[in-house]
Image (cartoon, rainbow, N blue to C red; front, side, top):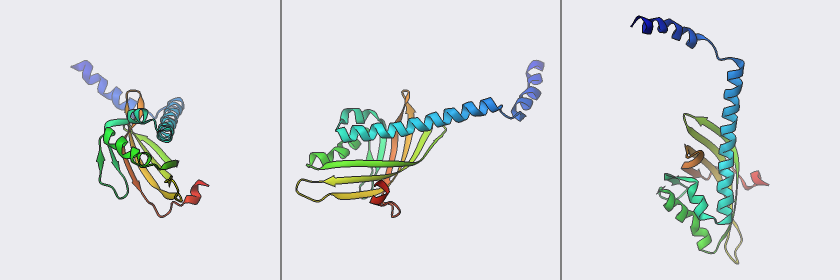
Length: 165
């Protein structure tokens, strides 16, 4: 018991010491690495979507993922989300999808990304429809990689097609 009580002052002393510059630099590098991995996860999603690789795209979601997109009911479950994403191609449209990350933050094992997006949707014989907006994405670290857990998209008035030219 005395040994346990003797540790208490030492614990307070250690908590009062600021982290070393080396520790701060390592922490900063780790944060930047995780944020880069989030950006890479977004690019993998885009590449697989554009390629129509639905099987691989499915692996980029958690099983309990949720998609909340403009004008649609909430879509729950990775399989349902992928089926929803296939609808335009299944209807004969070609889709060009672009996005630009605005912010990536890692906090408590979750990754948060805010991004601008642009979709150019073209059906045969028709002029393209351009849809722009902003996404708020929440990723979970699962199986050694970031997986999309929550995706909320809206048509933000401050995002225009010119942001992507």
